Amino acid sequence: MRELMKVTREKMTAAVLYGRRDVRIEQIPIPRVEHGEVLVRIKAALTCGTDLKVYRQGFHARMIVPPAVFGHELAGVVEEVGEGVDSFVPGTRVVSANSAPCNACFFCEQHLTNLCEDLQFINGAYAEFIKIPERIVRQNLLILPDDLSFSEAALVEPLACVLRGAEETGIEEGNTVVVIGLGPIGLMFVQILKGMGVTVIAAGKQSNQLALAAKMGADYVVDSTHSNVVEQVRNITNGRRGADVVIEAVGRTETWQQAMGMVRRGGTINLFGGCPSGTHIPLDTTLVHYSEITIKASFHHTPRHIREALETLHQGRIRAQSLITGEEHLASLRNVMERLLNRNGDLKIAIIP
Ligand SMILES: [Zn+2]
Ligand SMILES: [Zn+2]
Image (cartoon, rainbow, N blue to C red; front, side):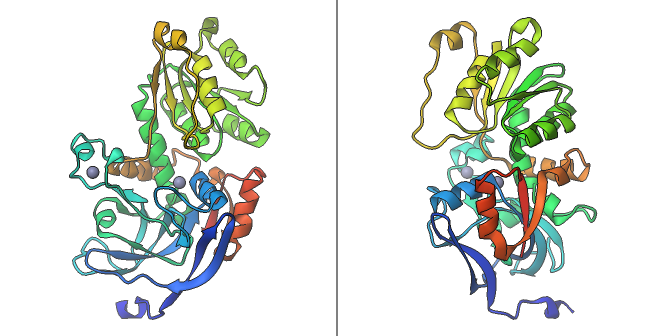
């Protein structure tokens, strides 16, 4: 029975990135699994802002040199396991994180596994199959509960980043927290923060995203295209003193600066969105010093947060389906990417091989 499920084909369909906005659907060899590795038949891959950036610029400085497969949010079914793998059998429904730490470097020893010097990444979710390396199999390949769909499960990775970001920011019940940016990440923050018992002010550009933020529990929504968005946020807070915490989930220098203006004395800013490399912002030294502003940032996730994310999705604490605004076949990936570049209101699209 199991033998029948074994891959007998040599090739699979995959999206290969050749350069700027140049992605082609091709037949490429199915990866062969070796000791400790697992081959996953992908059932759903989700588009992500990072992939869109990679598509637009044609590469990723740290990990994608074209021609290359890409995509990193995925869930599927185990197709084949390498020798020495005993926690998974063919047919198991799984979700994989896109990386795993080495557990041996200085940062891993400090429990900062998200900053591991040797994070091992996988790319290639926009394909029929993906090979999960041993290190990720051991740490970040998780079995799905039966009642969680593949596309919802594929949210584990971005949600893990959000959970870690929220945990790290030192938010307390009763706080007022601003979320700047209402893409999938910002909208996940809104929901997680509401679960923490805080007042949420959601600032975003697109009207559909503002409406979604309100539906997902934001207490106030503010149109960030208004030149006085900082004033608007301050006006909402008690005594115009500013918010206890501001989370920037856009990754633009303008919004990083807006965050500085929105926080109260003694408050915390989490610069969650990564800006283009080489960019800088001026810092109001008086404000930062005399108002004792804490500026922090959060990057990536850890194996613990991957597990918490799966649990959060399983408990339905995130409206996963509202974040996935469409489903398309792998062959249409190029059209999907172009659509997302045009900011037509889509959030995440599930790509089905
Ligand atoms: Zn992602
Ligand atoms: Zn490490």
